[in-house]
Amino acid sequence: MNLAIVVGTRPEIIKLAPVIRACLARNVPFVVLHTGQHYSFELDGVFFEQLELPRPKHNLNVGSGSHGFQISAIMRGIESVLDAERPDEVLVEGDTNSVLAAGLAANKLGLRVGHVEAGLRSYDRSMPEEINRILVDHLAEDLFAPTKHARDILLGEGIEPQRVHVTGNTAVDEVLHQRGRVDPEPVLAMFDVRPLRYALATVHRAENVSDPERLRGVFEGLARVASALDVPVLVALHPRTSQRLSELGVAVAPSVRLLPPLGYHEFLALHSSAGLMLTDSGGLQEEACTLGVPCVTLRDNTERPESVEVGANRLVGADPDRILAGATAMHSAPRTWVNPFGDGHAGERIVDLILARDGAQGSPKLTPHPTALRR
Image (cartoon, helix red, strand yellow):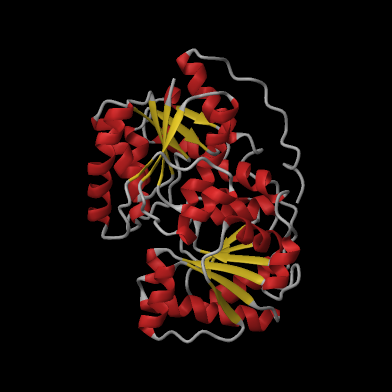
């Protein structure tokens, strides 16, 4: 048994880190292949250092570009690598162009594909991510669904039950693994904020960044939240969002403080101590739910409805009035929800399921993660 683990963006590095550690613990041979979809030290390199992961054996360095360019460049580059490595299974995670391109290339080479975080649906086909995740779910042999809800979606689409496994979400694994290694105090001091007395925000989705009206609405909403709650809003920006703000001349209120891209530890320190998270990220909805931080999602839909159902999250879109109303409600909401995304052992389950299928070993009994119930 040997695995190829494909990453291309920051979230993929974070969410596949528990799988990599499980491989190391079980002496499963693997190679890490980086597509280079995120390509700067700030966007990806620092994550390998902070998460103490082996550097990728291969890096395609595809960089930015149109969807067609990225997908075709990754497929061309990864085909020869996979053909030379001939892994028993290719693992991809999530819904990016890297995931689709790697999954397609592996499938065309006759290699088994495993999709981590399978079965998520926003039911918004205008999102490139929605198309990517649907296609990969239907070509993969192993579908590692984070929740029963995701499993039910896959079964409802006609996927055979034996291909689908509920594992929990690896994002929970990484949050629980890393937060004990993070000291929030120096980071809070660096940004001159106090625990629970600030809000944290991210804005990067194309639906918000590409649409001038939505982008202005989001930042107007963040300014209203800062004023109404009397807290600063710290916004960790993707470089593309910064560029769009500049191009459009969007006015940013002084109470909305723009931050550069942060390393995982710095961001986790800010997130774990925040009074509120406002985001259009999918993964941060899961992370907020795990950390016990109320979340306001700056989108009209979500592929993480479990967080809304348990009371940890509210959908508000890009309208300033709705953003303010949602933030006010969530800021005062009780933080008593039960995390629906797993117990911190998803990475181990994924590797054990692959090994059990291969006959290499059975799945050991997993004990509760020592920090799984702490907030």
